[in-house]
Length: 275
Image 1 (cartoon, helix red, strand yellow):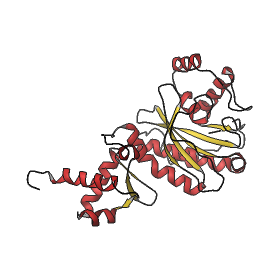
Image 2 (cartoon, helix red, strand yellow):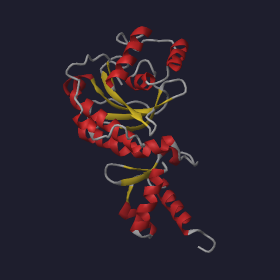
Image 3 (cartoon, helix red, strand yellow):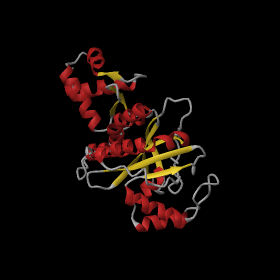
Image 4 (cartoon, one colour):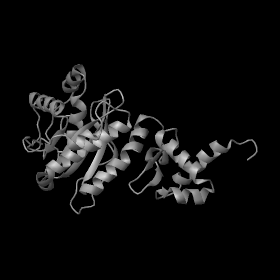
């Protein structure tokens, strides 16, 4: 250890151990394998989570974020931090509802890109590929992200985007889609049923940063039959989850506890369209 900084070496030890592990690791196991004090290990993993290098699942197990595992690079930054803070909440919602849960961010083209997901364990479930972008006009995640963009960016998006149908229920009329965006801004969440994928439905809410900007979206995606039966429960879960993630990003204007008691409007809402 001569000439080495002990704290820096321990950080690298943690990263190297987790990057080489196929499964997440509990703190006690990490302490035993690295031979360091538990208090020091806890401080290290807490710091690495805050900087976006590690995530912690619902079982209190630590893992290196996938973008770091798949190719070495300093991946700290907003998306890694968002992944780190949202993963436990995403997994908790999945475990409570046994439905698939997504977190997406906005692309430069105003579409949605998946960065975190927890897939339902039910035999019939909704899933989406980690690759590619989800269309801003045709998915609930895309619409929620588009709904809080500036007017000029929305105008630019529609000017360059061909509104192609995915099936016979897809909205392809610009005026109707703009009306959906207005509804999302008013209600604070979006829903979609069968528009992007027949038999699939979703409900999504915006995630805000410390400045109050909508920077991501939380979505519960399911099959239409289950959504029709449980939409009020899913609405409560997605609003609460989005608020909790926003709070972890520093958003304080609307405490996450309020979302639990917030009136659920699902009994009056018109369900229109999928994740």
